[in-house]
Length: 233
Image (cartoon, rainbow, N blue to C red; front, side, top):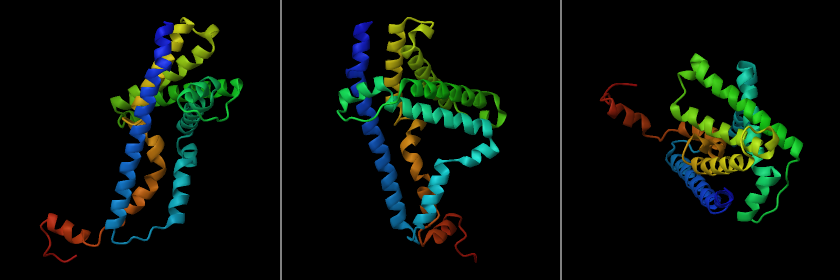
């Protein structure tokens, strides 16, 4: 068991981290290239930077969700806070990061880390139930959405039990192994699944804005495609 834990926290983790970093770099590079090429082909290259920035901030802090779907909005906030802050700033995780990336950064207190972990678990459960039980959400949910949420839920629950072995129904070392292996899997899945939105999400509004700045000849090309180039607009 200890050998497997050492492998999972050592070479397996470094491989998973490399796949995650390189994959995210590639996906971000593709988005940047798409943005640049679309902007260069745009008929109007003037971008309202201030308006796009305000829309981006509003999009990333979706307060409207709390008005329209308060339960989902709260669940999403709880989930994202926990799933982002605990892996990066929990003391045990920081030691693991520093073994591969020798950079110092602050850590969370154990009480705050526990609260964020439980919030993430509760948020994940609410989101998963909403995806499965609410008809409007269920119709838009794919099997990928469900199993990604399940992977993240196993990651959060196993991490809490690994940090609190007295509350775990399973053997502490086994729970730690599950947590580390699922964590490695989550790193690999990050650039390969919808989790990649963690790095692409801030560019959504800019991409949408540039998308509406059609190239100058777009209308003519559409007319040709529809075989209506002789008809008046």
